[in-house]
Length: 429
Image 1 (cartoon, rainbow, N blue to C red):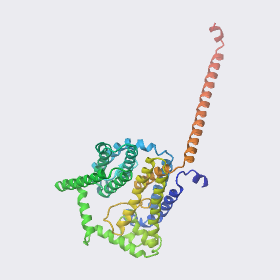
Image 2 (cartoon, one colour; image 1 turned 60 degrees about the vertical axis):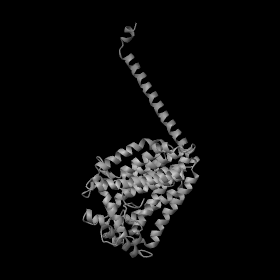
Image 3 (tube, one colour; image 1 turned 45 degrees about the vertical axis):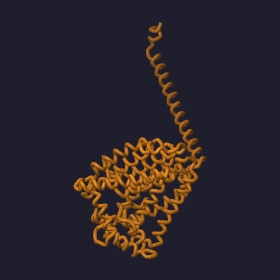
Image 4 (cartoon, helix red, strand yellow; image 1 turned 120 degrees about the vertical axis):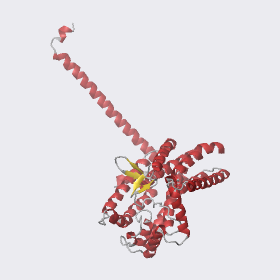
């Protein structure tokens, strides 16, 4: 165990908070999956969902380990090349999508053969944030030219958002907000930021107007859902979203100060998406206000650690990438909690590292791996380079030994052939 811990590089405090959130997630996921177990299997056995979550978390930590070994500056070049690939995936998801429970889920795609579904928008967000951090770090030394930045920075940003918007407004709004926060921190001129915000609002209104003109188009089918959710949020009319919110608030109220106890939630049997979108309500019901505030406190401490890690980074790109990848997962957690207590309309945002799900956990872990790569100390980087050099030297020795062995075998074959025929001595004269 000690050897394994010694292999983990980067900020140990971030490692600790991530491990605590992941370990805690097993209890609410195991408890809240009973609703899915009854619907899916008809037997109420949640063990399968627990093992599935274990696999997702295990793969997620492997992703963190592998990614944090990669020097973070490599992602600077990768982001530019990966952006067109992400656009293709988003376009494919928007056009074809995946049918889940009989409904067209245009935000999901399925990987062939292995039948794993994931949201390309989560990957697009990471690539876009790294791309924006790359641009800001590259242009820091020279004055910003607004016309060139429209082409180099904002055009890729809006192309990405346009692909995500028809299927997922909340994710689009979150990504756009985080990009604005990032360019503000990167000292992009405020007057230009104001123009970009206004342009974004105009483009959104134009999109809604097109949706009104073509209400039967499948590309604009989600616009009606956005409007209904906003109307339901501002009214007391009974509907499906209000049903979810009412059950979530009932779960929170039932928890009281200390909660009903692990696995003793009642509302998990009635609350849809209790293991993902509304898992915070189940946490408060079972662990009480103390448990809910503890989870909130862990996220806030993690955000505080991100700020420290950004301050300690040696390069501007490192500082920006920690903020770009760290803050969105904290804001996503806040949105999830705010929805559960009806501070925001229903959005469908999961609770990072706690909610069940594969792609959301893996993409969060990828972001954490990049952040931990930034937080590695100079001596840790030097040790990794030394270990890499030792591996390369050992590999070269093996190659040299194999080449020498092959040479000796060939010489022995020639020697045997020369003595095999006794007439060779006569024939060679």
